Length: 322
Image (cartoon, rainbow, N blue to C red; front, side, top):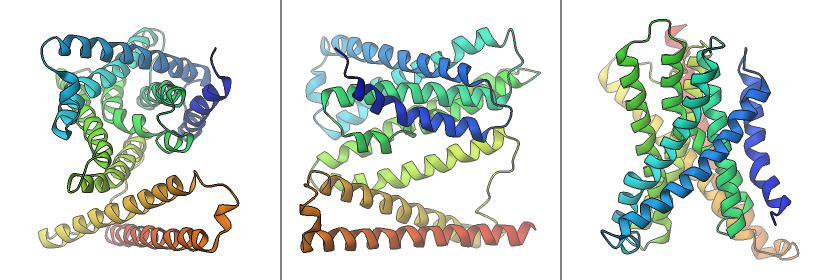
């Protein structure tokens, strides 16, 4: 029997995020259509799970696939040839098939196709959330904080697909753009999964995990930039200097801000993981309270510093262009 509470915990965060993007996009398609794509995305997640299982059965007939997965290079190989292509392929099919049907009835806007991609990705996330929660391999907090990740993966090919479908003159180069964007999503998907797996290995491989949240922060920034593009808004510029030396300096500041901001979020994530098993009465112990307070302030300082760098770069760009 399906546990209703698990289904709600799995579905509500993605649905709330879908509603957030729906409210942000003017001339968005009807909410019922987005919910249809959300459900199709969840079904594509089940299909991807089955295809991954079949792939591993076939792969095990040639090599010891289970043994390969125990080492980080093997994890990277599995992500690149199995997990990422199958999952991104299923999500792409889940957008393309119903969109092909709808475009014969309606003239679809670029922003509509992009929202369809987000809806499918969030439906895929809901299905994945339920699998993890049902088997007890992740907490509600961990799955909730990872809600936008699949949408961040699929944003490049969603943008490329929207460009092609909304164009009056569909050119062959636009089709190639879709494939390149999909390949970009596959690589980013694989890299995120490899970085998240590095935490379970010994040093120095464990240090790779500190690149996870800065990379996720960059992908979230990319998603927001693509959303601005489909809305017809100018992208937010952070690199505004004209000389090569100054531009490299600003790029270094962007990278530094991503490292600081990403690992500030990572630090808060680890803090919640550490204190979540404790009973409420333990949280008021002097040692535990000081530990929470000091770690929170430290990560807040890094986060504020990263935000300050971002505001400085934004101010520099505005001053130059306006």
